[in-house]
Length: 136
Image 1 (cartoon, rainbow, N blue to C red):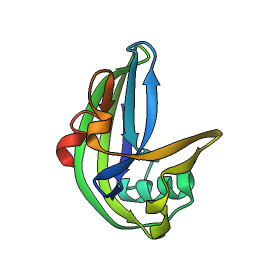
Image 2: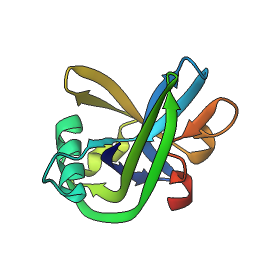
Image 3: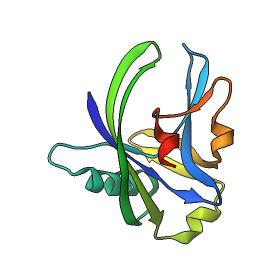
Image 4: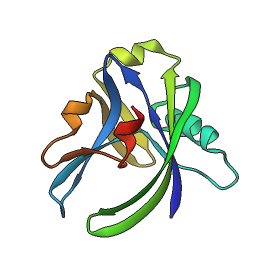
């Protein structure tokens, strides 16, 4: 089991998410940005650090929306996370005008895009973790 913190950045009815694909389930999933909470780090400090590391961006008005317990299968393997879900805003408002943001997570590079809830739900598409849509 691991503890993570994610952040919902909202803009014009959309949230900022990264897209993934589970080849075993043949399913596309979307997850807000964030990551693991380090030992002796609060979840709030973790989300501020994660966004700074992933986007090089500062955030403000950080508010805890809720905590979810996520038990899932990914690529056929079980996972279990305690997810601290935050809401915040970017200090640099120009980030809201970009359709895609470049994300750096260690050696991995990917993009995050603004998506509406309807774009992330339907056959073989879902917003993760389970229960996140209810917090929107």
